[in-house]
Image (cartoon, rainbow, N blue to C red):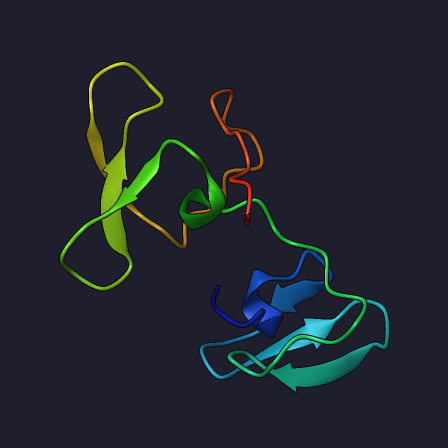
Length: 89
């Protein structure tokens, strides 16, 4: 299982490509820094059970919307009607 990063946390908002803002601490954090114990997984395609990773980094296929679609694993899936979080076990 990959480590939790700030940019994968629901409590982190992107500011630019290097940093985010922790909404709990109101402090800047490194975008790819390790998440804290208060980490809450942000709904992203890469965390969905319908997402299948491809050969290219952060690119894959969504199989949850009927026909398969190329998609970035980093895409926010908060409003996706087919999003089902993967079990980490």
